[in-house]
Image (cartoon, rainbow, N blue to C red; front, side, top):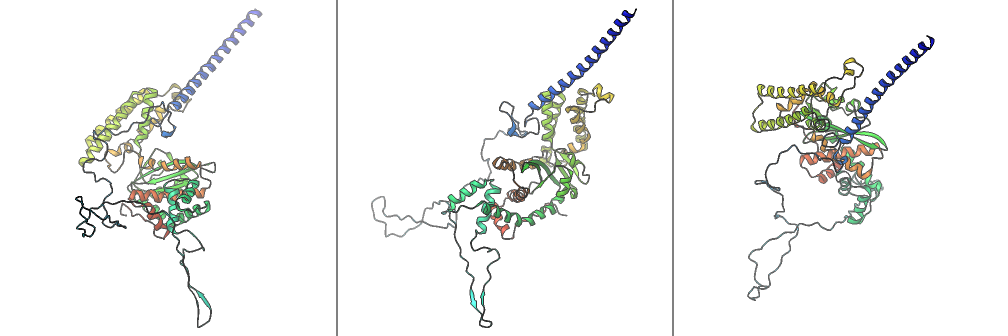
Length: 478
């Protein structure tokens, strides 16, 4: 009996061990499957189906497709386009006359007066050289007090020998507008002008430009909160091996950059523009922006559509493909209505809303809560569930572009402005100091705004050094 009891106990222990080990094995298997799926998803991400930049795409990955349809027109200028080409000038700086000495028949015409001229013009650069202007302050003997008195130099003449405003603004243009490296800029100056400027001279010129543009930055902070729509975005930049963030706030005519230590709400408050803003804020679902209830929020549909592409191609979610196509249909419909200046009717909006909700309902059916989620053992959601939560929770803001025509479909206005900083980091590797990054951000804000306004950049950089920077006016009256 004792032996039988011992065997029964051993069998019970063996049964318990097998059951416990099997449960652990199943749990471990689920963990491995989840990790494999995560790694596969990560490897499949590209600029076409995620927010990764195109520079990280591998050659074998599919390239992003434009949302625009083919127009059927030939490349180049279209009929009615004004074109850009050289035209004859009415006020040439130099005139070279080519005399006619002899007729085709052999008659001497050297003494005959010219009846008219056939004109051809050549546009070229004059020889590149720095011109030296010597400033002389008079020294006189006062007949009253018998002192030698010297006239005052203009305020900008602070050293016995220095570079002028035109050249100093050119240095800032090379570095901040054309993203030249310091070494190459110094090499260019030596080869073009015969003067090898030092690193200190280059950075001193940029610091002077930075200080001269303070009124411009203050004007942007004043007028941006009055705009109807603001685009915002942020990207990481390394400063002395420490991650910082470059924030952009812009419109089609204005650009403002700010370097901050952090990405979130503290940085947005430090900039100070968004807390005063009451219009539409276009962004990419960053939760830090969603906390501001003083403004209306709208979201970049390109980001949403890239996520839908990923779910369809990698996770085979049919509803994601249908919603992607629905967004394209909405975009084309809104463009046609705007071109016809035909307001969206309530019935038409409800039809689009119904189709949108149908797609989301199909997504919910395809991605029900797991047993672990139902029991409360697991709160983590899948990519599909997280996206569906956003699409449902912010439906009105996502579809607002159908009736609010001032709203763009994407946040490309902000994203395009970041291309320069990635080029700068590729050239320089990083910024060495926070002050250097802030200097580049302010000067670049000015340059981007000038280009949007169609103003000559180099000329207005020089005007800023003269104390008259370009100060934009608000597009919306207070």
